[in-house]
Length: 151
Image (cartoon, rainbow, N blue to C red; front, side):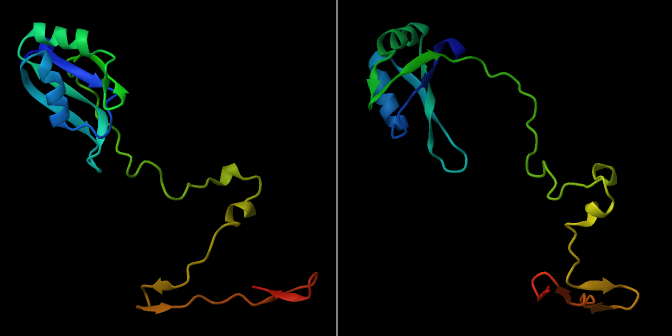
C-alpha cells in the first residue's frame, strides 16, 4: 500500500464507526483498510481516520465525489495522507515542575521574609536518640489589640 492510495478523512462525527466509514467509502472502490483514530485513555473517536483504496484512481474518485459531503450530520474533509515523519521525543511532563518553588535568599529584601511561610513539622525524628519526639509548642501570646490569644 502506497501513500497515494491512502486518504485522511477529517471532521467525522464522534459516533461514526469503522464499519460506517467502510460502508460509505466502498461505493467509490475496493477498500483495503479503514482505521479511526482514537484517544488513548478513553478510546473515544478523535473525529478523523484513514481509508486505503486498492488503486490511485479509486482514491481520486473518492476525494472528488465525497469532499464536503454530509456523513451523519458533518461535512467530510478529505485529503491524501502524508508519510509519517520522525518527531523529536516528547518531554516527560510528569515531573516537569517541582511541587515547592526553591527560594533564594537574594529574592527577598529582608532575610526574615524568606521564612514567613515556613511551617515547622509536627513530628521530628532525632536519629541520635532513636525515638520520635513532638516539637515544643510555642507559648500563646496575648494580642493586645483584640484582647484574645493568638495561636
